[in-house]
Image (cartoon, rainbow, N blue to C red; front, side, top):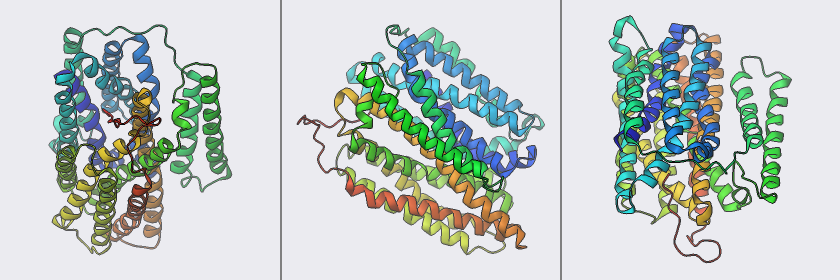
Length: 474
């Protein structure tokens, strides 16, 4: 269990630790605005696109083997990130790191499910929740400490290099201790579906991030339209596979389930808000107001503490009041970020980190309240036979939402920032105005979640009258 937790923690902490280092990477590597967005989006996108195919590949070749391969790939990619001497190499290494994360993450819950008996499973899954909460709290602080320490004369590189000894230890211990789980050679993967889905999502995200830098040429809009065509082709391909009785990347019954697809849309909107927000806040504090990485990380910590507290409390409610909890989460997130918007919009030549604590804490409580209730709401109307595929697909939609959010928020922020500098504003005012404007995306997206919360069905009955709701282990 400790090995699985360490690998899970290593993957989760990477998401939060990088945000603190973005300004240092930009200055050290001379990166453009869109390249800084790709440092975040490349990982999230590769992780999202790899979750479903590597989950199935783990079933084919054996989950323990795929888990160890994933940890090895993640560790090697972390080394490449730390050794990157230019921004292009770093972005490429982040893609490989996302692939490694996608290889190991689906296996973690699968290994725990078959390794631990039913009476121990609840405690095991609660430890995964604890590790996720600790990762969200430790990430910003650890990132700040490692960068400020300037270990061996290095700047941002130690946030990646620290994964190497941990990963090597996890591989050796995992090889010795995790039971060998045989694969099912008769299963197969949907490789055409993987290509169609991957190209479709990339075709949507790429022009959103790069379009501004090229002046929004015609090819950017053609590419986005092509992405929609590819996703439509993916839908019909899944239907063809289902009619032939062959495995699908995303279960076709789920694609035809209107309740599930509505829920997947809400998951995508919900997940799109946070990654872009912290990209903006880190740049605001460090590049705009001269905070050190550690000061920036500590400033963001109340949000993570709010997530951790709310996650513990939400677990006590089980499957009760799901729609009300999701609506409350949307209200807390929209309200907390709107509060943050007005604080940032009203700043002058300096910003008081303490003034950001209450709205970040409120928003963090909202996020911790929302995710568990949202996943349960979506999955409780999914037939039990599709629950595993449904929860895995929701994680993919969650990551795709994060990548889209980074692209959209980055587009708003960097466009406004360039305009502010062109108008002759100083760094303080230029960054504050751009950040305040970009936060409207979060306010609107979480406000939409609030409005849509009560559009979910009130009943948790299964199709066909089965009574017990499906509670996802995701």
